[in-house]
Length: 395
Ligand code: NDP
Ligand code: MG
Image 1 (cartoon, rainbow, N blue to C red):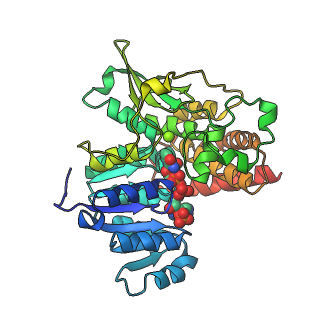
Image 2 (tube, protein in one colour):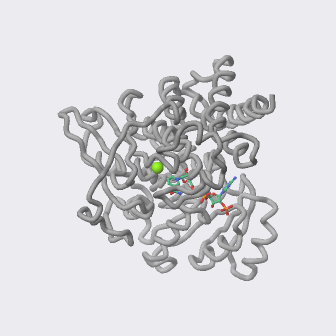
């Protein structure tokens, strides 16, 4: 790891979200401003929380993604000496400030540009923002390799796989098995799922997460994104990536090796496990997570996913096979479908239908196959995909 100062310089993007707050909690427990030089913290609409975090951790810079929130943030931080900035470019500028450890926890493809900027530091990039890998995995992985940046997955499944692979050669891996809780509608019929509202879909049975990822878990689009995330992170072939439903969310994922052995990672459903692993890497330190009581758990169940009720998984297999910019199209279509669902303009099951139709429409442009692309290409196809999806949903 290059550039590690005696006091680590850390930045957290998406500090006010679910992952961000868990990260701030761990930084605070590990000494806060006494231990770390906090460079940049970012949020969007929740400026009160952002200001409180920035003062508590004595951050150098506080950035809100929303230009209209600049004034309120400035007022809250008046006299603190903390630099204030707003807008998408300000996020990239803050992410370009040298840091030894960065948490990328903005939600959605909005996190891509700052994540790519942070990948230039040569330190640790803890990645929760899976959309960066789905939309531009080739770009992000190449950027990390070019600058010697250590990418540490902070999705629980991918952290589990990363931990399980420590000291192993990827050539020894036969398959990667991602576990999925199955979400709140695991046992619902397709007919019942048609009437699901955003309120119902937000209530995840096992994990306490942001609104968008909770709904993505209910449709299993989250697991679909994670399949693509795994392909980029671990360099495995599409046919080596499997999904298994595991309602208890205790086994975070498994790796099957060529000799038939499987190694699993177990832990409580608490994101501070994966975040803390990335924060303390390469060491393991005491973390404030519950310890498993296996006797009390008694049983761990597994079942095959139902691709009829959760077509997102089948769509992800196409993306794994097509590569290139197909992930950017998939992610943008999914984000657009989710916006429409949240606005009450699209049904729960219609989200997957719209993503399917959008991907079919854009396949005609045969832009998918591009293997060498830059950020502007991703931004362009993201915008085009949203336009196509909006048109299809209206028409
Ligand atoms: P949240 O919705 O809880 O938080 C999102 C964060 O991003 C907030 O800080 C929010 O600011 C900020 N934000 C929102 N919109 C924008 C924007 N347009 N530009 C910049 N910043 C923005 O999300 P989560 O913490 O749940 O998820 C964050 C990421 O981590 C996602 O990519 C998710 O898939 C991934 N992840 C999350 C897990 C979880 O347990 N929550 C598990 C694994 C992965 P504000 O709140 O101030 O408006
Ligand atoms: Mg996950």
